[in-house]
Each structure stands twice: as C-alpha cells, then as structure tokens.
Length: 191
Image 1 (cartoon, rainbow, N blue to C red):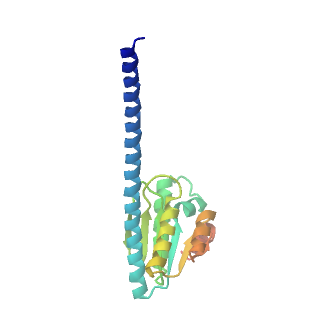
Image 2: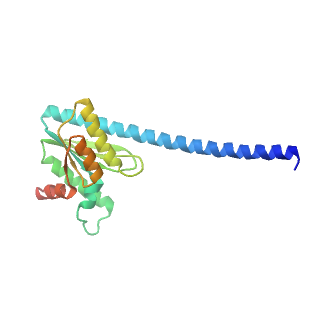
Image 3: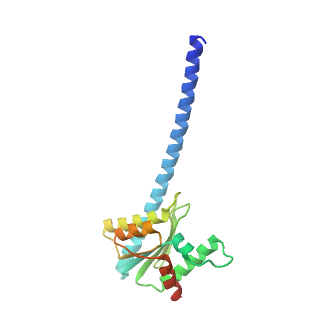
C-alpha cells in the first residue's frame, strides 16, 4: 500500500466517524427537543392545576385530591369485557362523579399519556402527562406539589396511589397518601 492509498483510507475512515458522530448528535438533539416539549407541556398542565387550586382556594375549597390514574385503574377490579381504553373512560366518569360530590375539593385525575393535555370541568381536572417512559404521571403530580409549595398556592393535598415511590415523594412534599384500593372503595361506596 502506498502513501496516497494510506492517506485516502485514513480520510475515508475519518469521514465515516464524522458521519456517525453527526447521526448521534442529531439523535441526541431530537431526544432533547422531545424532552423539552414534554417538560413545557407538563409545565403548562402544572400552571393550569395551580390556577385551579388558586381559584378553588378563593371559592372555599379546602384541599386537592390528586389521583394516580393508571395505578388506580389497575387496582380497580376489572369489568368483564372492557378494554383498557373503556376502563379508563369508566374510571374518568366515576372520578368526575366523585368530584361532583366533593365541593370542598379540587379532584385531579392524572394519567400517563403520549401527548400532554388536560381539561377541567368545575372542580374536576383530568390530565395526560405527555412524554415517554415510566412514571410520567407521578412526575406531574410531584412537580405540581413542589410548584404549589414554592408558589405559596398549596392547598392541603391528598394523593391516591399504591405506588411506593410516588407515595414517599408525595408524603415528603406534605401530602396525605391513600392507597388506590382505599380510594376506590370510598369512591364506589358513595356512588
């Protein structure tokens, strides 16, 4: 192999390395952009929840009940023949009815979901966390609790979950924690 072939081979290898590095950098940038979009959407949902809490406080509500949607959904006895989507709709409907009986509280049902979104009606809000990965609803709930404390907008909070990590984080932020089955029993007993 002569010197020009060695130089040419070296250049080809370097170009391939640079192409690989560029592809990795593009993938990292796309991932960072997705994470930023999810964080901004979560922030928007937290801001809406804080506005709900401030409005509720002014109207005389005395607490917020945050519900780990999927945790409660999967702790609830399965209704025969219902797919997850229908079970989620049924839980959302039942929690909305529970909220209607709780004028003293803001009831916030939080699900993991591909796109961050939410809607509110009266003292009931349902939110989808957005983003990818596990425990997104948990992060949305704990981010809300932390933001409410920092903003001084905190109402006493209850969190319904059987997720140990979320329960510990919520308790550390001053929330009372109830197990998913305990919440389900209360919700269904009053129905």
